[in-house]
Length: 101
Image (cartoon, rainbow, N blue to C red; front, side, top):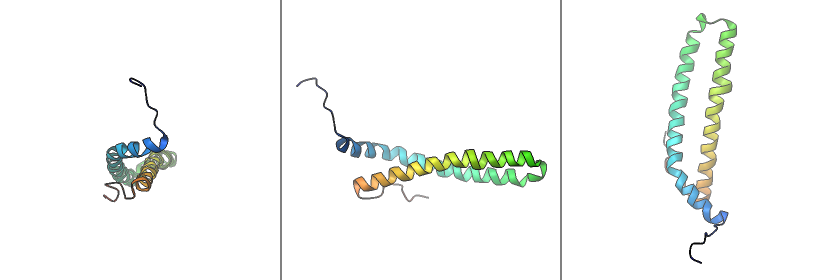
């Protein structure tokens, strides 16, 4: 029927979606590694200045790093790993960039 919309099943759309997400996945993965590296360096610098912070301030800083920043970054990295596993299951090989460090 001309002009009709064809509904695709999940099994038909999943490979296409996984393939389309591969490029952004590689970029997000590389970005998250750079953020983790910078965050670790910043954390070390802040903790080296530990003598200038009272206990409450030090605890607040640690809480921000551990409970907020690292937690959010871990969520991104877990999502990337999950998408890579789905890509590998669908296409039988690792997504490009999976082992880039």
